[in-house]
Length: 432
Image 1 (cartoon, one colour):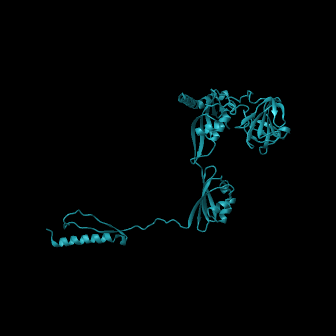
Image 2 (tube, helix red, strand yellow):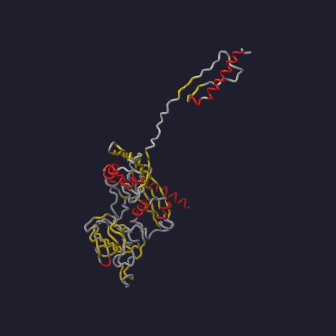
Image 3 (cartoon, one colour):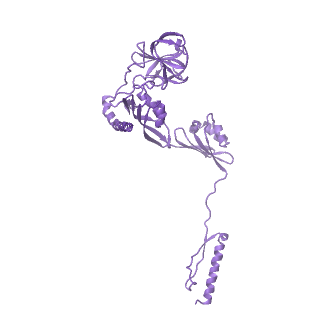
């Protein structure tokens, strides 16, 4: 049996533990202790050590309650003053800097929908402004003494390649939407194959397409229209393929697998999408004159304001009003070719006689001026001054791949051609 004084000592020690633990929150210290095994008591050789460890001072910075962050979105018609007002900034120096400084011009040019983040103090003075400019660059404007300092971080650009296939059931756009193809790529496909396929008249149900295209992404968001690298279109059993090839230092074009240019000297249509309301005819009842007469052109029904494109490279030989044509543009092309665009509502800005225009360039907009019963484009195609039916003309090709570039063309398109073949065979197998 343990001596009485030893038992008394153990009882006192337990009492000390209880008092110490119960006073921890009040003392503001951490006590280190050991838990002894549940034995009959403490031997004379065992003892407890109690240490007081001071808590470290709380060095975490508390947020400055006098600093405010607010974000907003650019709306149509916004001014610098209005943008600052909406984020509760009332700072004449900041307003002056953002309105006049060349280094802050990207803020003044932000497109509708772009967001920005503003930091201000409790006196509503601007401390910082952060936003992504129209090119995807990260811009920060910081208060620096009595003025402001602008820093810019170049956007991270990533190029992604996509593959899409589709089948025509009702219209081209319905098929491209269902396939998830961007409108810009769908429009490019029309331009690429527009010399071989009349997308107004030639489309058939169950026509098919495959497209390999690239898109640029800036900070994870799509930034540009993208470009078709290779495409196939099966129209009424006929298969057309096209490949992009950089055939000059300044650009490239689309070519068939055997190196022929996909770009015809003339586009089949001066309007991307519309319907032919009246074709080329030697005898047609005129809806305005109420008599039979020849119709030596093609009418494309389209809403007022629809863009009208030059069907080939050329020079403006006439722009203005002319009789029954109303507002008309006449282009002269290489060789003995001329094209006429009538009943326009207005012309492209600054279009003038003698001006050179490129194929696909907008020269005017659909209207109903002159002898027109409704909005449409009257289009004529002349050879040596004589009107010819543009829907039946065999259009001349563009320049093919040169002999010097043929090897490079074959090497650059080999993999793309193989991928199109794989897509074609897979699609046919799926249909079977």
